[in-house]
Image 1: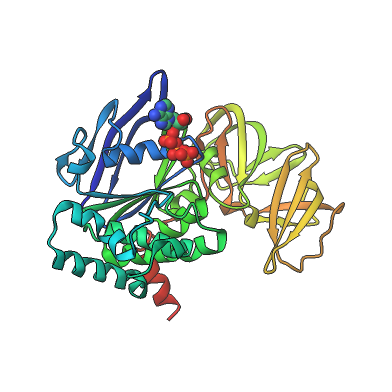
Image 2: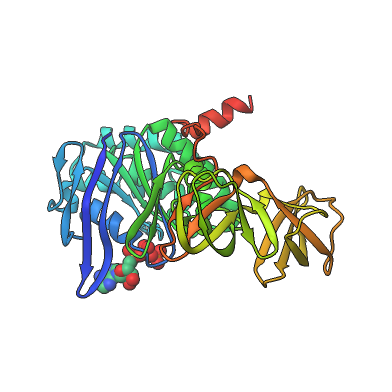
Length: 380
Ligand code: ATP
């Protein structure tokens, strides 16, 4: 397995910039997700790593080798697409071994590798079955098996769970991560689903309009979003934003929003007069009778172990609060709002960049190398 390094990678289609000077490193054995909305350049980035698209400028390194202009077939990488097109006239065993036959690998070695991959994927019993009758989950496993048997230096996957229904996606999310941990493979996955990226990745690159907005571990991008875009994209329900104008001095520990004085973590810098946004996640909003920041309840959504309350402030800003399932609150109630001070972030409205994020000075635990194994260990 190998490290993948992308340096100032740029791709333009005529006048349109699809990927803008991206640089990042996927460490050897890391599970890395390219995450962002449709059209932000994720697939184009992955295709340039795979060699299926040539960069306009910039470089791709696989290990120490500059492979920027090497053909896809000359790169030791396996690529899995969203639409796992299996050969319908071949059975599972033949589908999995097909690329090895094409490479001229001896029959006994193909048999060994296919059976080993099938055991890892728990589809040994399906090896002689036709692929046409398989469930979407099993088809996905066969597609992964085709990649595994090649024993590549890295796996690249474009929306590998995209064709699965919601329930099965969650199962396959765990399986994909567990598979990664078992193989110790360098893996790059493209997804537009933040929950998927948050649950699988060691590192996430969040892309917006061709550029990487932030690179970090799931906890890092959740707790310390570098921009309004990231804060809004990661987390469900999304972060709340309250606009206000202010000039702030270093050390200030409150801001004026309408009639309310709202506590914030002490400012680490002066902020020139500007339009700002206070950001706070729904789980850090409490309904408090004594607060000067007033809002009306528009509705509640019962989630079993909590409820999401949608509110509108006097100035018409919509907010969401995640509160206890049994909190006595209903549509039309007038309530006060209180925020967990330590969890409040501030953003510059014009640039969208974070001025100060929650827990900026706390040391966040780095993502465990093996998330799945760590979770399993925790649960005994
Ligand atoms: P999606 O999840 O919808 O595929 P994405 O983030 O993977 O989105 P890309 O497929 O990388 O996005 O596309 C980025 C942008 O580049 C899009 O606006 C797309 O229309 C454009 N694009 C991609 N390939 C080409 C091409 N061959 N010619 C022209 N434009 C292209």
